[in-house]
Image 1 (cartoon, rainbow, N blue to C red):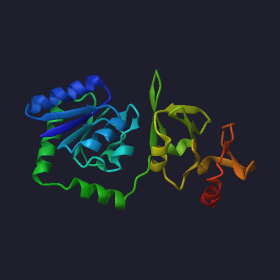
Image 2: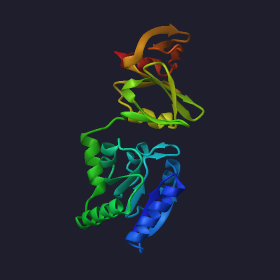
Image 3: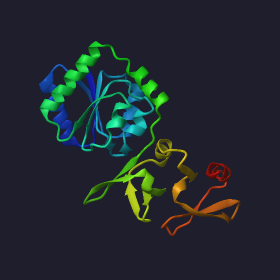
Image 4: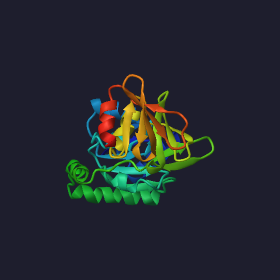
Length: 247
């Protein structure tokens, strides 16, 4: 059996590796990858493995934006510190959800589940396509990490999202700026298009927080967001689509 580990913390890689070898020392660990970028590059030159162990919050953001592209067709056992992504996990080939710190007892039960499912010859690709075709999901929360805390910010409480030097800043309902790691181009694909619109290369607005829209130089528009002093400006190329969107 060949397995892949997707995890950005070395201590957790060691724990998962120890559990794997304790469960079955003939299992081959092909690679340990620490970011979505590494996963994407690895799959460009390597075949699918039998099983994947994946963390959820990686160095360059939430793993689901990548998994929803169906890049991984193998069953996935998720290993995470967060208990808020169960639905997301089982929408992308997830067969088990292990909360850190991961005990060997829970790990072995997840492996037994994997082996039982393998005997039933589950078509993971077909299941994934069926789920996404019938029930498209949109991102419901973002994870905000600081030096002192980790907090969860619901997307319904985000008035706008700004891009800044490769990071994102979520403007919450109080006008406070909350920095988190994510690619804006990935994020807009995960947000509900009825509520969120990308008005230029670096800014997304939530229609529920728009207070006022005014004409701006060059047939662009200036948008006022609730409790946020700075105006957000549409680009010339998006203004027409934005007008249609708000109607």
